[in-house]
Image 1 (tube, rainbow, N blue to C red):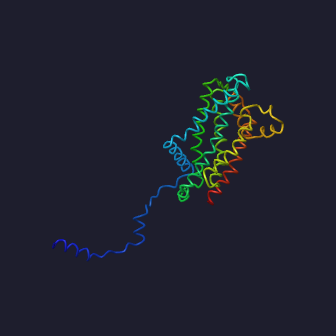
Image 2: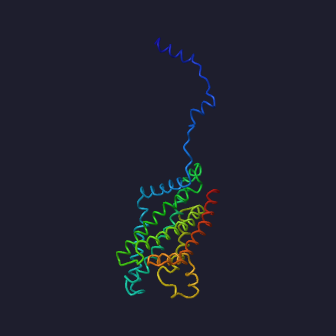
Image 3: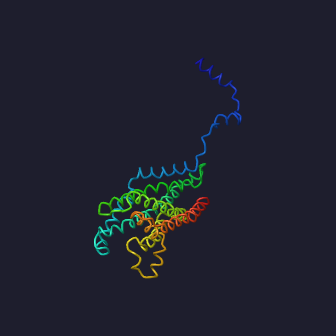
Length: 286
């Protein structure tokens, strides 16, 4: 009892000085702060986050695996005999078009993912981070490019299994897929804009389908536009999806469609400039 009483008396006699601001700063603030992440590093980090979401919810891959297989088999065996006489003849024309249509349709999920993160409050956290402002958006789209690539590979594999034989070989296939990925990345900015603008996930899906369905079906994906009425040919021939499908089809066939490639790249640049700028404007104001 005597020892405890003595220690209590010593603590009472001890004078505790108030720490100064400099002492607290020296204690709490590390003078060697980590460097600010570059724009590329931040974008890749958010792209990796999108990939991790797929890892933990692999069902998200159904739209880039099961759906493309259904599209190829359904349209090849449904229209092959009627339009080209056989599936093996029709698949030479159909497969690049179905690849374009499937990947372009998949792009709408970018807007859904953005809208979901906004609803959960995740974007509020992103906006507080000292990073390049567009990095979360670019990261979303970089992660989706991997999804587009998986869909293209799956469609090509199914096509090769049922008789598709590209004369352009590996180089022609690679050029066609790269052009498709470039356009899809640019096209996805439309859906990020809608993801920020609309209030619910269902609204984003509804608006996306309303835009994508006529844009993909009113194209040269399934048939040559020469069989269409004149007024419809004017729309179909100037559609960005038709230009992209023609470019991919010719590249895989071993040709070099300079006009179609140039028009597709022009559309890609225009989409990024218009909808990318609009998306970032909404993102900064939201």
